[in-house]
Length: 291
Image (cartoon, rainbow, N blue to C red):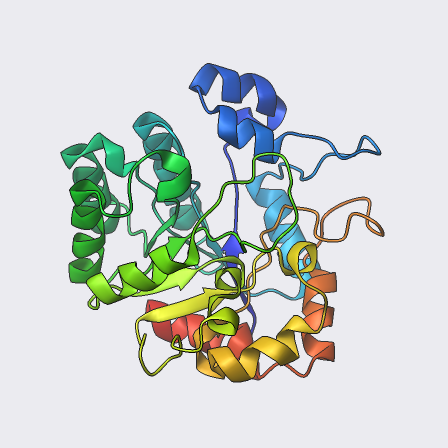
């Protein structure tokens, strides 16, 4: 079985005019990251429909996908995406799971949205969140309330992480790695998933491992855009084989030099070529989500 633990999906109106939708929704940062074009004129990602996502999963042999929200700037955008994801999960419960997203800067409204999504919509996690991008401090009490509730509800929290050594790109935001270590220690009852290999945190901080941060997991989203194929063999022994979740970041094009369109297949092939343990592909995330 294969579960892609990091996939993004948007309502059809977003795909019809991404830049126009972003302007109307007042989401300029998302527009920079998701609607820009590379130097050769090709888009950094596409905007598939639900049906097209399922076809891509079938082609790659992916059994289930976890739909992640975005670190939106506005609380209303979070609600729109959460309702869309709830509908996707209701219509395809055997193929799709979804995380809710919130804007903690909205205060108590964020906690209420978190509760609504967990109890009323059947969403099974929280994220992708980013205090550094959404405009609140990692120590903000409102963010703390969201994280505490996630722990009480059993919702894993996916956080966006940027490797401090990564190359510059439009929309890049610094996310100091020490912040994530601090969050894991401040909220030991909350399980965190640090996206994008956690920005290499365990590779640069010898005090970070499964033993002293037992509530931290890592996904592999966008791996080929950030690291060479050797990251699998370098990271897994350090991170712990039971702490890594396969995630593609689809529909981002991970191999723009060779692929005209994004696909899940090539990253799966890269992972298999590295002899990645089977648990990374499904068992780890299924255990984390209880599915």
